[in-house]
Amino acid sequence: MIISYLIKNHSTTDIIIAIIISVIIAMTISDTVKNFRQFRTSSNSEELNMKEVKEITQDYIPYVISYLFPVLSDLTNPPMLFSVIAVLIIIGILYVRTDMLLTNPGLLLVGFRLYEVEAENHIDKLKIISKSVVGRGTRLSVKMITRKIYIEQKNTA
Image (cartoon, rainbow, N blue to C red; front, side, top):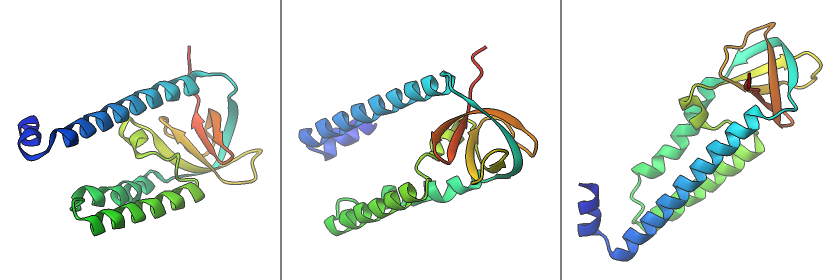
């Protein structure tokens, strides 16, 4: 049904471009998943003991919603397309500057939660991405992604 719609309503060039973009996206997702699995199972972890914990998984919702409106927009209209691109660039800059870039909503879909914690031996509050339920007094083996973002180390045993 989708293929017949594409063939009837779009040129061959449009279809080829859509296929190429789809293949690139699929390859990127596959490579990202592979690298993520390798990263979580590699060595060099750190033990953290949680003093204070706040689950902030609900912060994913505004992140996801901010990317939904382009799907609902008429991107064939050039002014609308430029507006969507401008807003996405601004959102991207904000997420990079606020360390939200690595709080990927895709992680929520596969069972991860995001926590803001105060841990022993750390002055700053940290963000922990974990499949475990984290509470006060929890000890986790984690790997640093950035200076303030850690991911739970997956046990390889």
